[in-house]
Image (cartoon, rainbow, N blue to C red; front, top):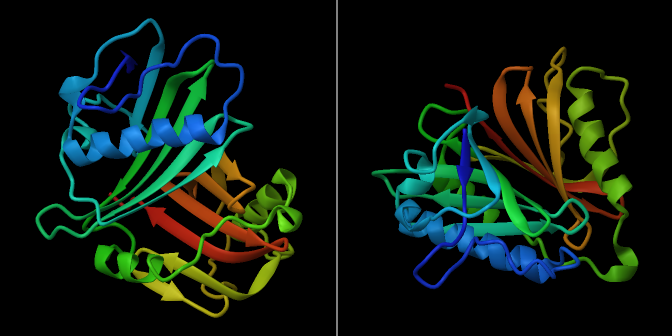
Length: 254
């Protein structure tokens, strides 16, 4: 479904900036992403108005409407963390909501073209999804350190993506060499596996249709893909010194 998007009222905005914007920098992406988080907290789809640009929204990889999707529901957000891809002009946000009446763990990729938001893809996990336990997710996520990596120690975009791809390729090819870190921790739903991530990886499963948001400053690569070619999935990786440090997963099972 194609929607037209302009501004978000109540002091925040997802509108396209002035046409003179020459680059997609972290400040731009942070401003736009913060506006998205505020919109989700407020359930503020009624404040979205049209503009001249086309906008596509998907929820769990199906075309959806902002007026009936998760963004229309106000949520008490206990945790949020975002990464910014200035090369692809995109961001990824992890949201954790422990409210017993409406618990969720949400992952959202925002993609911009020529300064305008053109694609919002949201994975919404809830009761019944793989290892869903937002209290556990919050407990472990809040203990981790995703600080900016000193510039001299940052990995290239290619190295970060290669580490993520190696992990995902391992599901279908056990000969793949994965740059395991030591320690490495995997947050899978509300389950936390450490000090090694090289456990419990199934075989014979292809991870298809991958879409990436890569942040060299934070050493992060988020990948949206079809788990086993079917289930909507997000795997986010933190790469330090070329090796996997953290893995966060969300898998929709229904």
